[in-house]
Image (cartoon, rainbow, N blue to C red; front, top):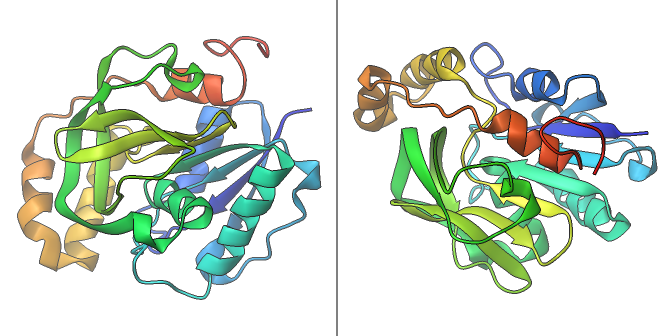
Amino acid sequence: MTRALILDGSLYRDVYRPDEHWRVLLGDVSADAVHLPSGGAIPPLDSYTHLIVTGSEASIVEPADWYEPAIRAVRGAAQAGLRILGSCWGHQLLALALAGPAFVRRSPTPEVGWIEVERTGRDELLADLPDRWFVFASHFDEVVEPPAPWRVLARSPRCAVQVMRWGDRPVWGVQAHPEIDPSTARVLLEGFLRYAPRHAAVVRPALTAEPRDDRTAPALVARFLGRSRGGPPC
């Protein structure tokens, strides 16, 4: 039976609840969530088939105590053969856990708002997506030149590693936030202005821009679950 564990890295729950967004996309799949910053204990992985590591307002290059349990969980899940998906901070955590700290850094060109992603490689996760798609992004750190066996599958004009896969294992990182729709994005961006006003110069243009969301999340999540366009397991 398919069962997912969500590792939730959110800091400001009044504006960002990624566990809830991912639960909606998982549909009828049974899912448990652990809030990492609260020190929630990560349960044994042997009762799960899928692991999702969410985004976070935290910086991957500023380690906190709660990162280490998530790193151990990612390594254990990868070794056990679970299907793993990391988004934004979770994408970066996969690189940190499975490659090392040399492969994450501050982004010289942060992305906040609606971006266009371009496919650069063929892969089952992206099989039902167009070659180019628009999605929401919000990140000030990034993965850089991940070493083998990582393979880069997509990029954007400001970020060379938008989607990656760990060799042929079912382990994927997605830098953007496919789970965030336009209304959720507005709440998040307005929250940014309150909690991180130093980023106002990049947040305000994103708030005034017209949303461009190709709603690729359902197709992406279906493939992550091992289904085709939300159908039965492949």
